[in-house]
Length: 343
Ligand SMILES: [Zn+2]
Image (cartoon, rainbow, N blue to C red; front, side, top):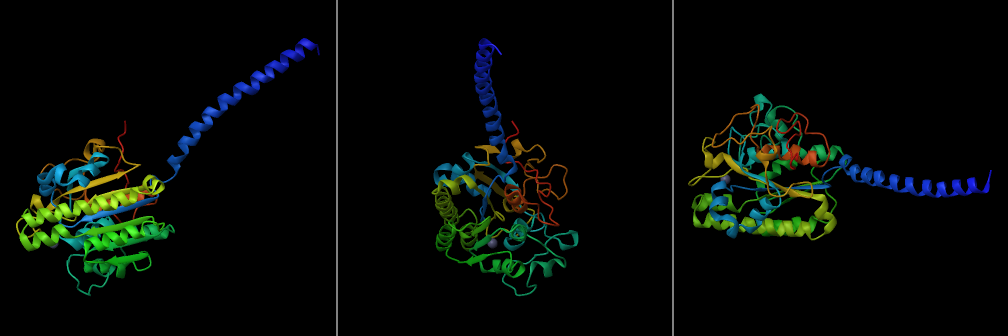
């Protein structure tokens, strides 16, 4: 080998050592950035339901009176035209739909919870349905995860009786502010799913009428409670990055009540999501061509392009956690509700 060839090879090897290093580093980085796609979108999901919050109230009060809800929509994906369960627009049937992903009518595969009080029998959702009924709690539990329920009405004890092993913590407190304090104190605990039920609008609506001054005050109070929760979640950067917050209602209301399932004011509700896995300021119908804004219609089940429903909470949460849907569930069982624009 001549000295010049050695010199050439040496310099070539320097080039070769350098060039591939650069060429290799870049694809590695791309692969690294792509890897999170195999991970869950969210390490933790917090679902909030504001009992009896009507869309009419959210619209009437607006951004100035409801800064936290409007900020939620500005930084997230949302619609003010989601739907409750079709059969009934009352609290326990609709909330049970949220966590089971099922309609109400048991004969058609529903969860069977048709009552809305503290009755001891049927003592479980399964007894009401006459068949096994899983929930977002049992799905998370089956994957080894942890869940908690924070509710402002005692009737939610039905869930604890129905899924006793899957709900790791149940806190029921009729004082909404104290309830939020307890949820905030629980945030450092590593949980995959939390459900928070807030009751002020429903309580004020029954006492004074929907859209009355005390009712609107209760909606503003709920906005403040949501603000406290979001602030607490976001106080820790890792928790902020890993948490998706969903927000909906069980029903709206009209006059002194909300039990007429044929009334727009009763069946129309909000549905919102925010977090690092969610696009900013997008309309859920605009980014989900497989779902259709129902206008003012009540809608039926099984539509080719269904509306967004509060019963989609369970499977949307599981989708975000990269877990399979609730067994036997119906709403968003294909997990195709997107929270990001396809573009
Ligand atoms: Zn009520």
